Image 1 (cartoon, helix red, strand yellow):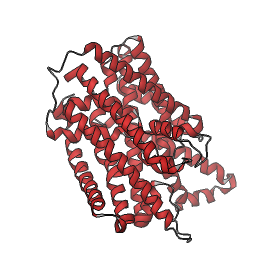
Image 2 (cartoon, helix red, strand yellow):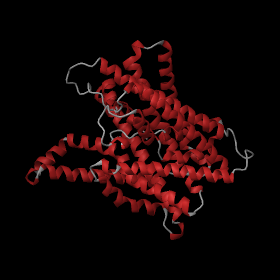
Image 3 (tube, one colour):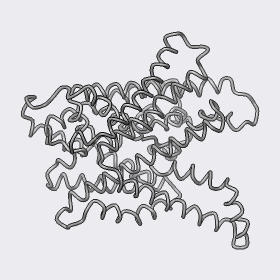
Image 4 (cartoon, one colour):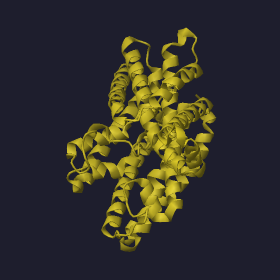
Length: 425
């Protein structure tokens, strides 16, 4: 999922244009790698190990290319920008590109999709935490729903922290726990590996979009593209750094999904850590992951809060309320309403987490629809609008191919994920 509007975790004290290629490389890893990777072995089980590997590879290459399209669009607009005071002239975020392409409607559409995709990532966090904690404490008669409800006051309190820099280290801790979890899973894989006899290469071509949806979800951080590129001291090297990062991440994703499916076969669960035995090492990693995600949940929610609060402060009723309570101080009223809105956003995410059927199906649906629109459809559309007149025929054809395939993938992937009961649990 995108983490637009969040600070770059490894560069908290850096200003734009001062980061080395190594810092940017590390930051790309932090921005992209998330909990979705732990659902890849299940995607390989559903689609088959060859189909899963193809789906992850296609998703990685396509996401990399479309990230470069955003940078190209921003550079083209910067070279032709005017000195007018139009609200769409400043291009810093994904929403700014939407505004430049389609006016306010484009900004609202882009920000709406970002909000929904961030909700998807936040709900996935809650699902992961609830399912892993219930697997650890299964003897205490606490259900998945119980752990989700226990998280509510914690997440509301954390969402009231205004400084992201206080929470950013936990994002790195969560990624470290992700790596440890992957290492333990691979170790377990090697111990359980009994050959390819019962492992299918392709279960069905119809299941390829499911694996692709999970894979697209795994490539989080798309909304950070412009911020990552702008943070580099040598911005011309960004495509090279991004290519290195994506090559490594895609390879790790393919190997992890492959080995996870080989180890557990048809018993592979939608969160592969649930397949691990309840020994001390696996339990420690699960708890570390849950703690890390608990504290990074407000970071995932931050873009939502920024957009909601921005619209809230522009609304007529909010301005009238602040004016009515001006005797108590506008700042107090405004702060109170911000706290209320953040609490309501957390509650919406909790309700959604309790309503979704399962981690695997949910992740694939979010990846196939919202993430596909943000990662493929909109970048290709913006590129055609801003750069179409100067592109070669093959470049326009490629953009149209990405646009059409992205829309088809979103439609078919949504249908496939909605019928997840056919795959079994």
